[in-house]
Picture 1 (cartoon, rainbow, N blue to C red):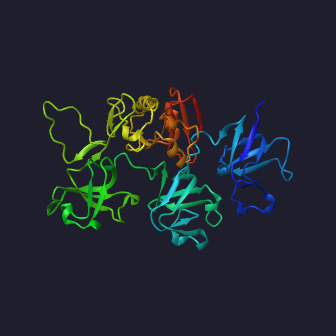
Picture 2 (cartoon, rainbow, N blue to C red):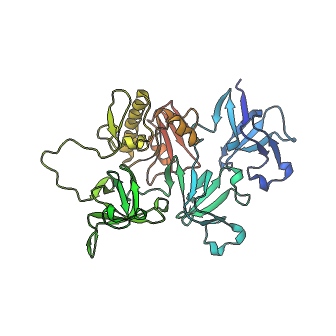
Picture 3 (cartoon, rainbow, N blue to C red):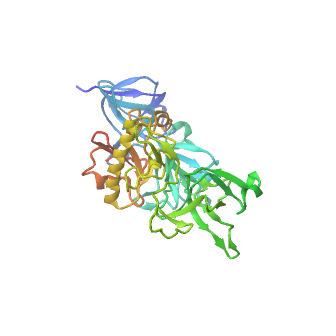
Length: 433
């Protein structure tokens, strides 16, 4: 007989309804302490109408609390175990999205102009504030939210006016997962500025020696920036061999400024993976061996040196920079390196099937990084065997449906990150369906 246990991980409350505690009466709550355990008859985290607003619904076995055996508890405060094995939250669902506010703004109870809402429906939020999220959405069955993000704040301590669910204008905030923006999503047809050597962004197209420190910003080789626009000349002529560019996302603005210059020998502009500026030169009759311009680093064992812009498998579309977070997460063992290569092979098959570029949000995570982003202690990311991805124009569920018939590892989709899918080469299993 399987023993089902609810383990309370932090001081919390049982609730008769899955709503913020502030909306419940004293008779609808029961305080519990971290470390307490309760034997369960059953549990659920969703029904046909959706999830329970970030709560676990559970039925106690052989006992009741205040005369009731069925309660709710917020999922960030407890876990469900079967014979000592954690079964909820699901593997890798412990990683949470983060909302980052990039300018002073207003959170709203409805996705409308602030001027038509009552003061009680608004709350001011300062630039730089961030919130761990239970979930987010940018549309529902009725359509989008008029350029707003709908968010559900995860921790009750951070609720605003006692409420978890709000809307925020999508140009004033963005959703991040493991350091990558998952919404607003980069578009496949965005221009990308790729820095090919350590250099400076400049406020004027002049030699660095002629500019003050306040007019310079140091950038590293291998970094990329999503652009709103770029130019290499205007009516007065060129920009002294510089590229003038405007950054697309406010989160990337430098000193609150979107428009900068960079020497065109130190960077290039790409569109759909192809260099569009500086203009490609004609291919010489006998081209030299392929040269990479990314960051060079050494893999363990006999794999030698690779570059961040070097494909993991020959001719493939997945790069060592994607697997290693631009060489900041270098595999520590040969086994992890081989796991990354095998996952790249499987992802390539999926990409070929869908015929669209994949955006890698998270691949290999060393233990310290995995812990910092809230990853599961048994996460396949620790071994280089898992990736969380997005595909422009497709939801996580659509991607899962496309590869489900042949993908032999794990497939996970998330109610709290609808555009993201988890794929791994671990044991065959799936969640979120």
